[in-house]
Image (cartoon, rainbow, N blue to C red; front, top):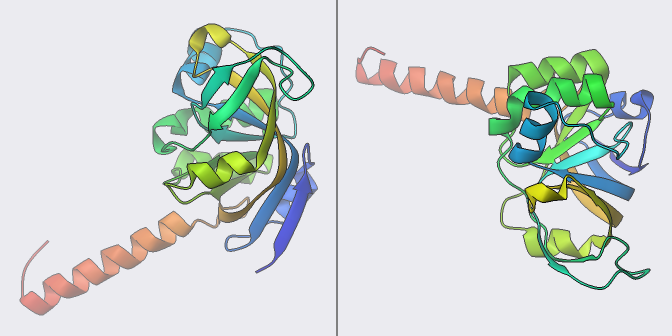
Length: 203
């Protein structure tokens, strides 16, 4: 297990070097995205002007405030609390994000499923996990909101964050089929079967 620092955007080779159990710190840029953002993009055919190629997206709908545009707040927003949301309900968007927009990394909590695992394997991606409840800490890793698109969906807009030392984040799914969530699921199923057998009960 290793720790790696990735300056975003990054290439496929850098992501394929990641393995489950590694930790990662991100530098430069991060994009915020959530349910409504992706429904607009993939179900309703809305175009975006921000380039996601080689970047990481975080599942979030941030708490922000409007401020006068300035070098510290180029988009006219200041971050108040930028946390994560559960990823699984956005499972169906992982492949089109990678295939159509070149996204490399997905950040969230709770993990993703088999379809995302296959997309990570095919296109060269990974899922980076954050512990729930750490929004205050995560917000300190964001230095500015650089840009925003689809802002009629606020707060589920497409956000471009300027970041510094964003992490460490845990590699929970990699491009080689590794998944902490699948491993835990298998262990739970085995322990359940053993417990039922010890009780003489049937599943």
